[in-house]
Image 1 (tube, rainbow, N blue to C red):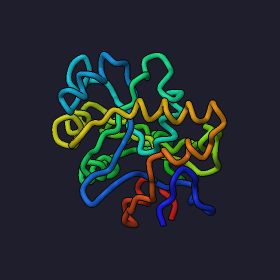
Image 2: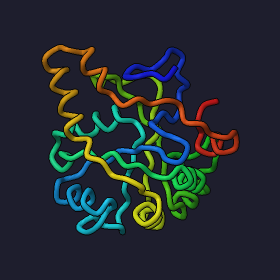
Image 3: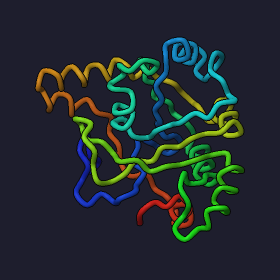
Length: 205
């Protein structure tokens, strides 16, 4: 059964968990309204969004809430839920370099890989409903300009505003209604990876 709002026991240390269907996966980003509103209107990113800058996407809703403070931190007051193609998502993973060297990798070799990679990934501690740190980790995916061009022009299939949802959950938490907050969380489940791709991104078996 899928899980909502809580992680099942024995969650692997590094596992991608997300909302997805046969064709798309949902990732999250938070921006100032000056960027978010034009993106919602155009259903992709348009100026003042800058394609030349690295942009980070996150499949975990709760990690996005931790990063944005429930859509309250300056510059992150609008949370976007972006449906992107699974083909694009997996291209990003395939072309990614970790933000730290792979086990046993020579540092100079890793630095060369990192400099040439269009995508960067890192595994950060996942968060619970109260944004406390958990033992297992969540993936963050940084898209450099080459990947950003693909993201903006071909990967994004839909953009939705998740700001109200973030505020509703935060309100329930502030009033002590944890169950009501938990019931609103997006449903996320482990994302399937083939063995080669899992090994490439250092995901757990």
